[in-house]
Length: 374
Image (cartoon, rainbow, N blue to C red; front, side, top):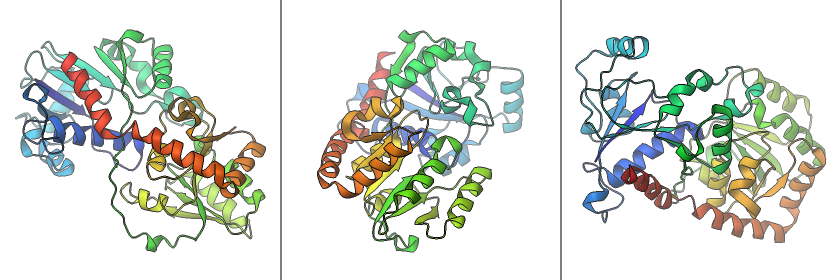
């Protein structure tokens, strides 16, 4: 079977939605690709795929270098890159001459590539936050402009039932086309030296983008009022802009603040910092999939988080929840996770069990089964 992955570009793999695309490529190619199979040596021949990666915006050579895959893993085109951009994006001219009829084309964005051949199209929308709550974003989701293209896909992958409901209602998608495949996490992490971050002995961790929907100003206000003198709040993330600057000013104006920014932390290093923390906190107003929460649970870090459907539908009772707009509930959750050892141990155990469902060993087989069914 021939499987083609279509990506716009290689974004910085800092945060969950960008990281997910790279992870899917890595996990599927190295498990089921005929040329690159590495992780699973026991797959049968009918479970292997001829896999290629295609991009309109970057050359095959750069894709090979960035993704560290075999050089045969990208579709080569003799048409110069700038000509391909014009022909595809402006004229919608089909240039997929190397794609065989009956193949599967898996897009991680709106499918703007035209094809004169009969192929099965899978569309995976990894980030729909702008669609769910546009009021938190300056740039609006462009999915509304491509409703026909979205609905033209044979299968649309959603990462949770919550995301599926949002896609179906907001983009008028036939629910029978939606296949739920959660995002995966790696279960094997190396230990790294985090001494350069100069972490305090006792701290609660926030990790993620620094944007208004993350509700950090409320978290900062509550944390400073709680005033537990031996505990710090560490903020791992860096998103330059007015919101980030306003948060830093909040910290500077508080004379005895125990809030510390440590900047962006590479995702390979993040588990090592998580293991030093006493809890993860996520006060977000919205989310589409709680990747960071599951990664924390995987390293036995208890989690307190906002009571939003994106979290509760995936994490069930493995998280201590609070209302994102209630200072009282947020404060109580912070105090409980620090002082109540019985609650901490329950969340550690429940969280570990919850995270095991999202290991790549389980998620990769869901992609494989989907491909084989088409």
